[in-house]
Length: 168
Image 1 (cartoon, rainbow, N blue to C red):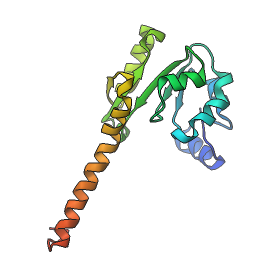
Image 2: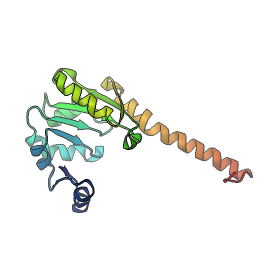
Image 3: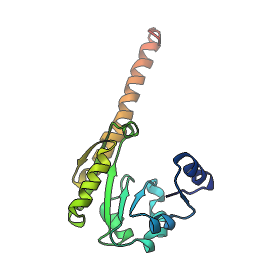
Image 4: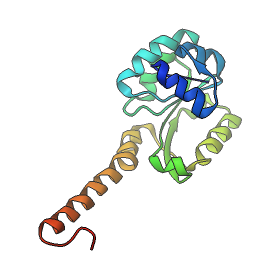
């Protein structure tokens, strides 16, 4: 089950993914044992305000929102809520991803930790990292490849500007 801000996106989710759509975020939380918070950081607080009263004991929340700490998420979802902070990267879409993962291990059972490991390794590799490093993980795995691409593109543009044909 998934929700989205617009009717158009909810229809697309239902059609393309073949899953149930929810008209409001609280429906997802009422239904799911594991909730993915795949929301841009500037909208996350609004979403958490919508769902906080529906959080059930034992539910697991997985956030991919950069810059939002476990402490911040816990303050909005409730102290003791099982929260995972992660930053997967684009190659995850083809099974070659690298995900940095952080969570308070004391809140999770060994079985839940095995499920977490199995989930994140199902689309690449996973490294459990200290939460204070999560912003660095996001920068390294998310932004750095884009910067390298920009550098290569600028290098190619410089070569073309100086007479080398682009298709050489």
